[in-house]
Image 1 (cartoon, rainbow, N blue to C red):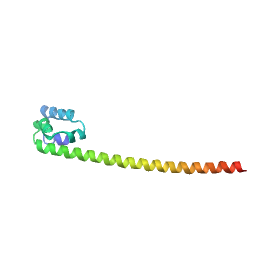
Image 2: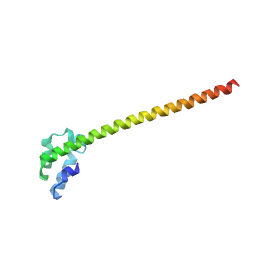
Image 3: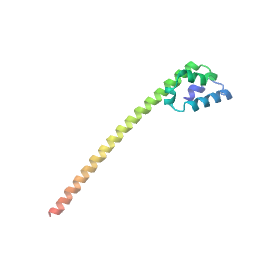
Length: 107
């Protein structure tokens, strides 16, 4: 998101102040997604090219949030799969131990 804000700027005090204000007002991608475009435009007006920057910020924030949700879903599925595999192995070991104990008692 910083690239969207700072691309093609001089990097002066006004630019740094505007970028700092932007990140203070909208610290997360979900905050940017929920924000009104006119509010963001007002905050980044000193940077110029506000319409393009707001569009890029919204697009990048949405892409990031979507990617994070997808990765979280995949990790959740992998964790469930690993847990199921672990339980299956533990169940097999438990059944083997019970069978062994029964064979000892039968002697």
